[in-house]
Length: 308
Image 1 (spheres, rainbow, N blue to C red):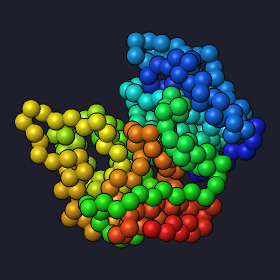
Image 2 (cartoon, helix red, strand yellow):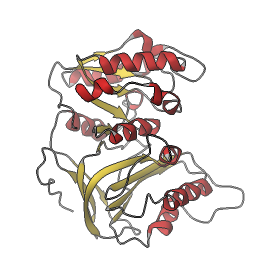
Image 3 (spheres, rainbow, N blue to C red):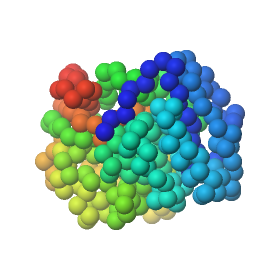
Image 4 (tube, rainbow, N blue to C red):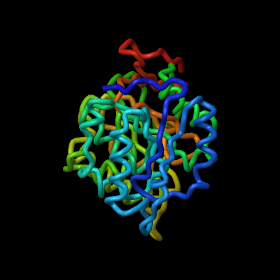
């Protein structure tokens, strides 16, 4: 189920289902969205605080539920990530969203929410978030705008020594590696069979990247992929005794047996170049000696042909 694309004067709202936010941290993003012709709804409850959270669990559920049920709101953009969504997701009533689908956007901890929507066959957007708009590159913001407004869109990256060439088609799903691991065995667990899986992470020890990749492999999440994308692995850490492999090398070592195209370094994740992905949409991944491209079906037609 794809929510209606936005048009000028549509209302979009900010939500803080995880960590807390300050008003001054979203001022720039409001200007950006208004320049797209959108009306930004900022509920005063957005700025609640309870330790590191944007309000206690009940308060965060209350605001998010109200935004889901508000038929005038056409998109909900999570202002930031940080731990907190899995604490509340099973207590949110998504039935109204099924009747009146709207875009839900974000990444990092929001991966849990996007995976939960995917289980309900609702397309979301893995994208940058308002707290980061001022830091991000213009093309990151533009990628979010294009998906929201239903414009043609593709992502590309230069060649990488670990890439595996080929062409794949499938639903594009994935997100933060740590979050995907925490979802295994829960109602939000991601079904990956036949999909193009994308992965990214930040501030993790290399041994833990290895452990989480092994977990994906042991639970069958890597067995029947159509393709694999490894995005930004940002600010990786190591122990006093080095692990001996980079994050890219770890993922390569555990997936090299699969006969699928693999693209390393596609600009998705915790860096200023964080290109948006329509989560759950059928995409086409092409990897060759010149680099990689990921294009999407916009209106149930053939994927846009992105040259590499």
